[in-house]
Length: 270
Image (tube, rainbow, N blue to C red; front, side, top):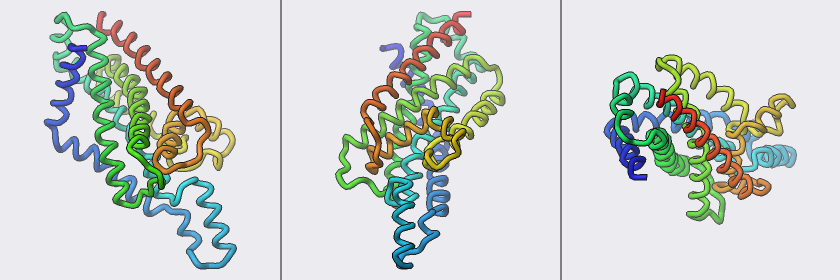
């Protein structure tokens, strides 16, 4: 634990020392939420006060998204997409440490290999949780409508969901950082994975309105479960057995982390 903490602290100090990177990391999802969430609003198709039929259409649209407006829907969903995007850069830390020789110096010390992998992944998770907290605050100021009985526990459960998403994908991309030898290939894989996972999920649009083949993929996509959990805790979007889903989500994330760590340790011992 002490080894993991020391290495985690190094990663966090290195990240906090690069303030422009921290600011840019936060601005990118904010721009996405504000520009996309505010400009693309299906409720604007039917203005208020256009008669009974118009109100029925507006009510149906609200029922479709399960939130008060589309901005609330997309702002809550983008928290898990943000976790995915940040996780896709996690492997760069391992890759550059290998290329710059720091990893070789670290591997000749008595530090456990598991601590090296765990510290890097946990640092990625910590960064995501901190930035997501700020992202939720900015979204709230921009119009995110929290549920009426919202409490601090709801926020913590939403952040726990985001942490599980980050743990899962940070582990996968961190393992890729130990496998690959050039950053171009690592970033290319990140872009290749991010786009399909984003659009084949409930982050931007409800899965029950998708074609069958796409809905089948979206229902297997962890981002869909993460987005629905965050919406349930923040804005009261209806969901069956959210706590069981959260528990299973955590079990899968820890299993992915443990498996990735085992493979990464073998790679470090070569």
